Image 1 (cartoon, rainbow, N blue to C red):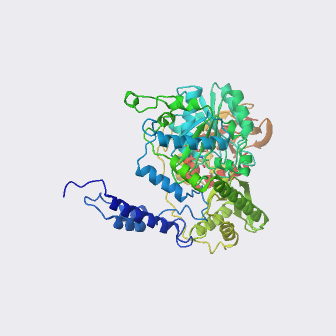
Image 2 (image 1 turned 135 degrees about the vertical axis):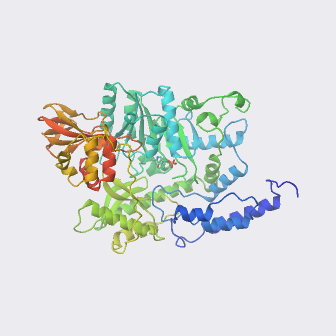
Image 3 (image 1 turned 60 degrees about the horizontal axis):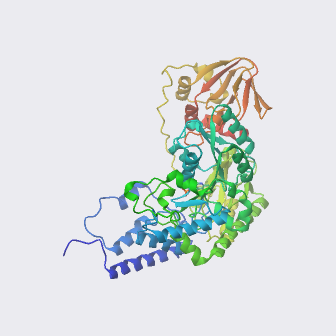
Length: 632
Ligand SMILES: *Cc1c(COP(=O)(O)O)cnc(C)c1O
């Protein structure tokens, strides 16, 4: 025997390949009710199955497949299940999966034209399809990415390079509070500080309020900042809402601000008529994020960023070191994808798209998307008719939100508890799987119908379950509650010594039920301030994170110039801007508060306020209730 080789003979390659394919086909054709949609296990249990050092000696292929079947594959979601309506379902196709196999068997590396002209041309062809579907011009450019998160980050980096160049602390990013968290992450990665991301309120249909956007931009310009980037959603995660794209297009064009449309899951609806109507205006954006691994039925990973003025994408990313000069295409028409994003070595994400689209034909994809529109509309009608259900957001791009009503029960926390129980009980069946969200502070069950496998009866079965299951019967083992790990960073306050009298704190309604330990923390962290009559305490659209509780005096609240409330001792304000939305970004002030007498108030720094809301149940409940009524 010579040195063991990593190259296999043809017979072994075939045998391993056939066996693997057989196992996959077996698994994919297993009946839907044979296994739970999601099964999980503890890290310890799985480490016991899978941990340990790499084996020094070879393990037989058949043994490996068995181990996969036993120790790995049971513990993952069956994304292709027709009752998978949670999060954003991702349901691939077999020809697409074979595309990934081919890309990886041949180890495609689609960074330069010189080394992969064929796969580069496939990617260009796929990008041309996408451009046409969303109404982009021919000279738009793009690149396939690992997903929407990478695409959103690429867009923000491109915008910054195209509009201003180097990073500056004057730049501001705007998005709705319904924006996907990857926008916050992109901003954080690219060095935007907490006061450089403006989270804005939405209208009754969960769409970014353009009046709020304009007002916030104007406040920023007055403060010497520079509006850079608006991240609009075309298919927001919670409700599928589409921000008013036409109007946003005009607002941004007038001000030289980059409009990005995050159409990660929703964008491909454009190939169907109802989707195209819902997405009108998307073509006005400077850049668009699409996720073929969502509603274009590609397997993970496959995202895409398109930039309307294609040269801007290349200019933002192109860097050519000496050691790559040979590999680059030298003719301008030869696209080197390494110049269009942050990866050099990159697989072909395009091959699966190209193969699956050709295999089934575009009409089949359009029909699958159309069927999702039919199913979600049918579900909405059913929910609207049912006396036991409440439709919380209308169907939009495959998503709606609803929940069960309970006669005689109006308490939000109780409604949440019961609905959450039903959702957990459903997840324990093989019928369906939904996730939950919060709309203006109200608990909602979210139904997202995107899978090409889903049928009317699958949707009905889930609605039946939520509508009819007795809540007592739905009692399943509650999810493990983990003791919140207290953040000690801020425990000691500014000087370590209490600054505020404990009785003053306990005298405030919001803090009346605080544990002594938490009273102590508030005493250390809070500041008492005196505000003269007539002074503006906070101003709408300005940036500020402090939370105020009035100890003495009165104040008046104005929104958009209209008086909306009067406050006195025990009342509080500033919680919306103090609460963290993500990556420590938050709303600007959503109202103006004016002292109508001399006011003495407790002021809590935003980060500490967030800790308190998290760990003190009485404060958390009160603030959640306040958010429900005060969110514009
Ligand atoms: C899924 C999603 C993302 C994130 O995309 P990934 O592919 O998961 O990285 C961003 N925005 C929206 C609207 C999404 O639906």
